[in-house]
Image (tube, rainbow, N blue to C red; front, side):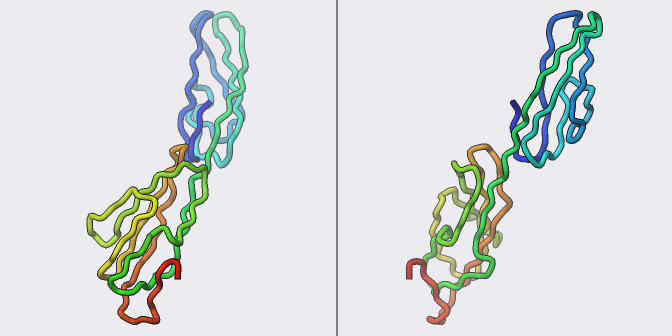
Length: 169
């Protein structure tokens, strides 16, 4: 059975035997493009759904029906602080210290600096020591292959002691 992350795709079928000439019909019509094709496209399903395919052999008039389930997985969600995080100038910061991820589990991480530098990391908990205000982006891919929208965190190094934040304190 096909599965996707809500983007849509093609349902693949194979018909054999009989006269070799078939007529296809899919139900329900919602989400199905080209419902009279053997391998129709389904578009943007919002939840898992069953579809019914009826194949009729044009030469013999015989027909067969089959239910097919398309499983739709939710994309993982990434939550990072919305407001910039002030850290003591020269200190290190674990980018995952205030990260929350929700989804299907089995995550892989892709961090990148959004300031034009080429810094990136696939470490789930990278530690950085920014010398100037820097934003970092994170996308997460789960075990189903679904990808999150990019989360963003901004770190601002500061000399002021009262503005400093260090994880664990």
